[in-house]
Length: 203
Image 1 (cartoon, one colour):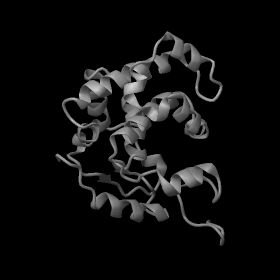
Image 2 (cartoon, rainbow, N blue to C red):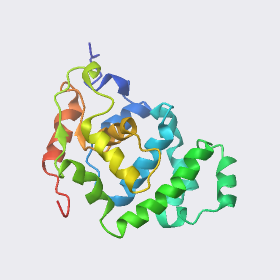
Image 3 (tube, one colour):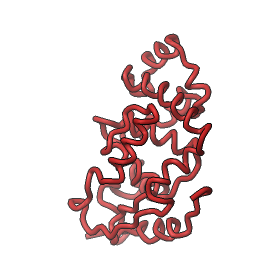
Image 4 (cartoon, rainbow, N blue to C red):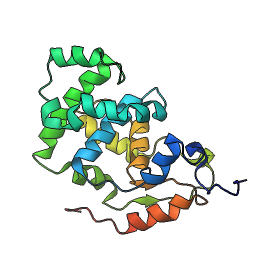
């Protein structure tokens, strides 16, 4: 039961005022269409693999500083010296494989962007129309879907790494490609309203 001074939100978000609750209330499920913002979220979801999202959330500003606000052009030029710098940066996840994947992903992102905007490519997997679910329990929410599997295959074909289908379903949830807020959550209707108004250039 929700306390009198609380609002109905997805149970994973916790109580009002927590870092998770703020993320849930302000970001999770809101449609994202900015290329750089989508690239950042894709990289952070990759770093999250094997860890909890709150770990990444608490280090997000450090990640932004370490990776120059996720400027793909700058990241693509990183050298071994930069990798060593990042491996000594306690403010981020010091995983060499994930750091190296971020550099190769920046290169893949730039190459892809020469043909098609990243947002158009990503949203193209659902024809620019968000999937609005009617979730009553998180027990019924899948960890991957046919769409996330196709997206994983498509990104890997473009040279991206750490983009497994489970990682990409979490990416879809967080970027508003799919609405998995519980129907009882106050954010379900709000996000659905934004999703129904969505228009992706080129789609």
